[in-house]
Image (cartoon, rainbow, N blue to C red; front, side):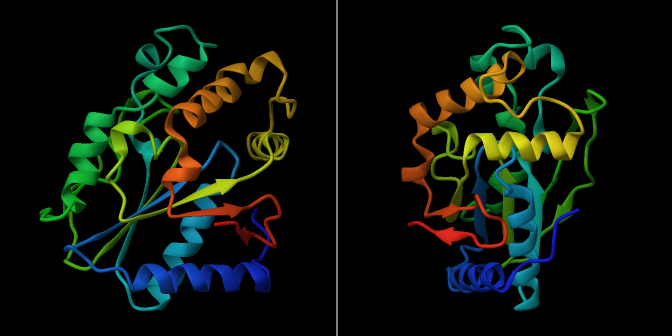
Length: 222
């Protein structure tokens, strides 16, 4: 369970929500919340969604995790392969067609928030919904600043967190695994994220970089 947000976390969320609220809709606003596994993306994206709704904005909150490819394709290069983790995890065509394009400039707003369930390795097609003009799309997930998705975001965040901290969060969340970045069981994920950072430079692509190492006291780095 996530602990209650501290006053400093509330202050940062209020600052971010005010900035998003001021963005021009064309006719939508597209927000990406990026970071490695365990960085706190989904929690912060959920908090930002709540802050925006409190301000009267209509928000659709989704995750790229609803657009995984089938396990056989994700692991085609091997179940421990880092490049496969980065390049093969997601169905980017479906992500673009079903979620990003509908919210793009001039988009029609008819979208689906997910198409696949990675836990069961089966299709899971969400009911199509219609977003009204002015709606804010908030998407959390890994690899959101990869070259194929550049230009997708009106505004975006990169959450900077120590790798050992993120792995410990994953172990706490999942109830299994090792918090050691050097452990062989983490190679696919740690090295895959390193490949992404080298290739995509998400820290430079994002609108803001946030130090989310201390969940109670996140800090705006850029």
